[in-house]
Length: 117
Length: 115
Image 1 (tube, rainbow over the protein chains, first blue to last red):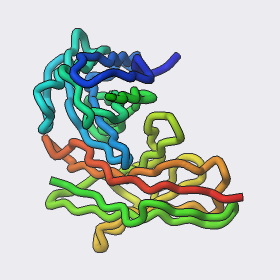
Image 2 (spheres, rainbow over the protein chains, first blue to last red; image 1 turned 120 degrees about the vertical axis):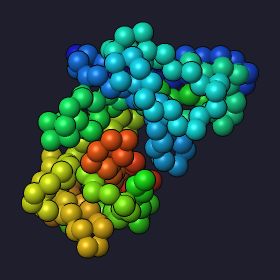
Image 3 (cartoon, rainbow over the protein chains, first blue to last red; image 1 turned 180 degrees about the vertical axis):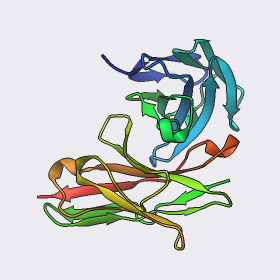
């Protein structure tokens, strides 16, 4: 049973469209994240939610809107897609508590490759 | 804020040879350090972490890393690599408290093990 699952795995779409990527974790973790990995493999955090509340919102265009209906789900909606949005988007989760108890250890999904034409 | 530099973007090595992947960090506060591995078309998974105590930490698949505070380094090593170790390796750093606990990743090192 997959711990962090993302759908879809691949997404090809035209510029200007709106698309969503869904993420679910069954680990009971309290914090979920979205990372963007560009073509050079550089990983950058976009958002972080803790118990459905936004706690990290890096400098990301407001065309990107995360939504967390409950602490097991964190979806990413992207409006008016641009060529530069092409990337692999990773969802991840971690548990709360001290680092010594396992916090700060992220469990990643397999990624969603978005290609904007 | 913390930053991570992985000095080598690509490291080719022959099977059964030793390998070292270099990582240096910068931080004004105490840090935790991590190595993650990404196999092709997969998400990242934790290899090992340094939180405190012994500066030599052992991880999965025979990897180990040594925390060197004076040189601000956390290099990853394996004495004998296998073809299956071919992957992208990411070093990451976080502060130990508050908002500094957010993970910052390096740019990755592609390890390619040749037969």
